[in-house]
Length: 87
Length: 495
Image 1 (cartoon, rainbow over the protein chains, first blue to last red):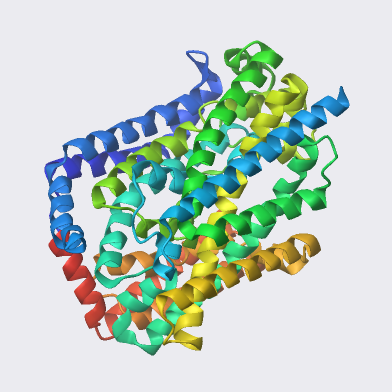
Image 2: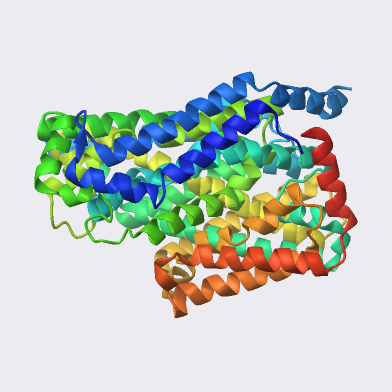
């Protein structure tokens, strides 16, 4: 199973998000949060994770829109199953 | 005043019950008298219904009540949640799309028939595996349903100002859950989930904002006061020091993987109308599950600031609502909590009834039963399960509560068995059976005997052992044609 460039970027973003949301990186962020509990009036710890995972959600939406391979998979499946059901 | 509030509360409550009953009844317009339609709608759900039934099912009463209690107890370590909110959305696409394709090719409609199908070359071993999974699904999910009903029934009492007793609330909740499932199967459940999903999102967000504004003058004031008075709650390891690095990581792994393969979540992979709908449902699911919690930190920290020593933190949401918002609004938001609980409970009841019908009754009791016959059987099973849920809820046997302690870990352990045949040709039924059984034994041992060794949640120990057993046993046993066929077919599609 070969991955398209878009898929590779998307999966790298997910892996990066998981790395950024877990120790040891999270421990470093957590130390910062202890001295700076708030950033822009929001809890720093919460804001950090919210931003990381919002990037993942937005990337997922972009991937769903843009990845040509996923669209082709949909078309392939439609040809095999859904048209057959119409007949 | 008290009587007027009781009247308002009961009106809102029964308005909600009425709306659910009507919605479930309307869904029967599209009903077909077949077990496939009852179990999966025959794969006809559109985008809005699919993503909201997945999301509302995924977020249980915990989303409303438990998260505030979680923040109250552990501070913002609670946001470990974010990973088990976003990743299931992505899994819905990566795993769910493949399961959907196989269900279209082989006609899978349940938890166990998927295993019997993909591991089909193993014959009796595959059947045994499906029975193990069915028993695990039945026990863990049904108990979860009962405990959820128990936890939520007191809200009826709160909304009605004591007129509806705890027991009566429990009975109303269980009857409603059984009715929705019985009348329309997954379609009725999904339609009511759609309304409940929208309702719980609006109610919960408004409730959080209102409480924070009324008690502190806004959410930023809550955060700023929390930073001054309870700063330890704004970072790890939280108020009680529980969120060590190993606990943080092992908790999200267990819950994410455990939830993805829970029967009531798995069954939704079969229900989409097309792959395109599944893809977009997956995207919206990730967003919904995450942003439902956008103002949860405010209400959780507000609760800690206002009631530092509250004995039952999971009950703080209604307490805050009743104190800081008008009664009618509080009752409206609390009805949202009931919606969150019901949308999960009826989905669980539906999944367990499907397991018993398709994975136990059909293969072992009446193999010649046709679709219509099984449809009627499943509806009777729904009623019987409703009675069992009521029995468990009223008697609250200690043993069941003990078993429930390993529910999520127990299903997380089955993750490799369910997902490996989507990607790896070499996996075999014997290896899968060994993996499932040994994995569950390890979860039981690390839940009850040697509790969470080295601070790592039992699910991860079970998962590691299950994965190792699956890989080694697959390599030493003979490859099986059915798995090879599934993987080859999927690769030809997802190339």
